[in-house]
Image (cartoon, rainbow over all chains, first blue to last red; front, side, top):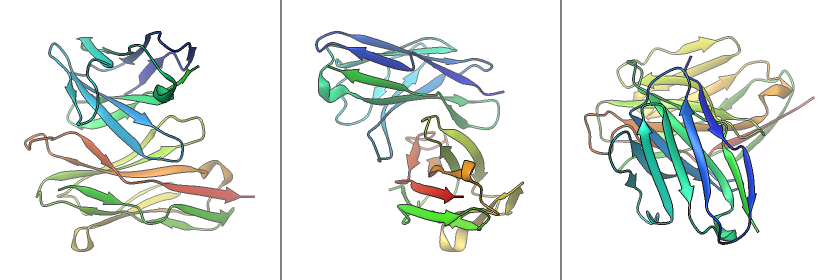
Length: 116
Length: 118
């Protein structure tokens, strides 16, 4: 149990386009999902907390208009990188918190974004 | 403030050696959770263990073992008889209880890159 999928796994896009990344909890419901960003050889940086049915909570320094988060159901959260630029190229990882008494975050496989 | 320190940036061992990855944390909370995750080259974070602050029992799972000591604020991870497949980056993380403000968020250490050579 506790499987999280993420789609797409790879995306290459032109500068100025928008990219949507989906995060799904496959065998459990998650009222809370998290979006992280990871640069090579670095730790994970939390970008925002996605709450089902309400607005996401963004970490300091993360542009909410740049990184749009929607958590429309108990199993799906999406991150849209709007008007992507080369500096947005990174590895984006989502996690979903399993609230069946364990409070553990399970992570998706990640999405590698390359903006040309 | 919460903080996790993994002082070992990189460790290289030869297969079958035992290796311990260190994790030291800082928190003033009485209720908190500690985690270890493995990130192989593919990138996905794999959950290894969760420990709550009231459970100081050490745990063993196959070749993996964890030593939680509140007195030294440490949660160290030992791999016995390491294998090449153990090569990965290992992250230690801390989260506050949901009862606290900012509860549930993971605070990660910088990670330790383990290289196991044949």
